Length: 352
Figure 1: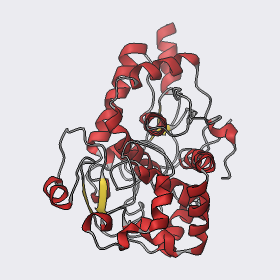
Figure 2: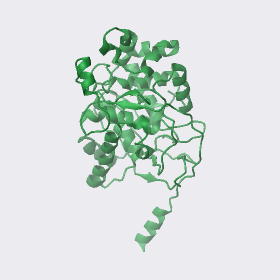
Figure 3: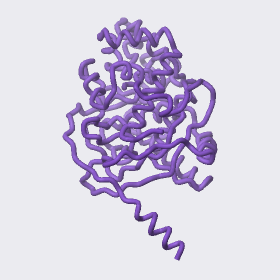
Figure 4: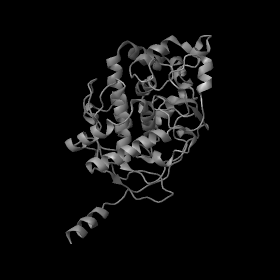
């Protein structure tokens, strides 16, 4: 009787209502992966490949598609905890699932409450994350934006909800299947090793924070409690990387970001083989490189550094002001990146 009672209580935790919203169009895209170890243009072109494979290449370089997490503070340090450069594990949460119809767009009728990690969750994640190869970091960071970057502030739909697992065949998600497998395997390991069933939405955010810290960036303490959507988010919500700077600002304003936050999150393009220094080092080299405008040089390799959405930031006086600040002060960049990442990954939730 006690078992039946517990089962009944568990099933009684109802889902959230969902609603549709109009979506803005975006350009269809392709992405190509570039190995970070190439040394000249001929080798670079020889190594560019379409499709999926299981190699441990460090980065995914979007050539004509949607912006990854490098583009994106008002969130206080209590949302995500303190930041530092010291090594530490991020926290996680129990999975919570939502029942929805196949045609519904994910939304939350009330804001679920996020919470700090427990010691057991912290330890379980540290153990499971230790088995992930550092080379997976750029893809895991990009996965965060493609899951959370569908958020629409006006309607309250989309956001960090694990729906990316239903969106992997979309053009803007090209190259993300390998990163998704890492998250899926992490969930299975945590469940097998520690008997903790953590939501995909939480694990995606945790993996992104792990990637930043593993590559030398700031520590980000992730709160838990995100709800997994059971349907895909609406299409056409990830900003196109070929947008002019005004279009980028509009796209991020739709999510609730200001210009400084957009520029701060753009700094994650330092990882992933886009030409901004070591592809597995998270630092402020992205901003220093932007100030040099290497894509205007005559040599082909320099012209391939970054993507168009990086280049156009330098043409906007407001963006350039923040680029100069972050280029001259890495600690300030780290602090602003942490608060912006917290904002991105807590859309639609209450934080403690």
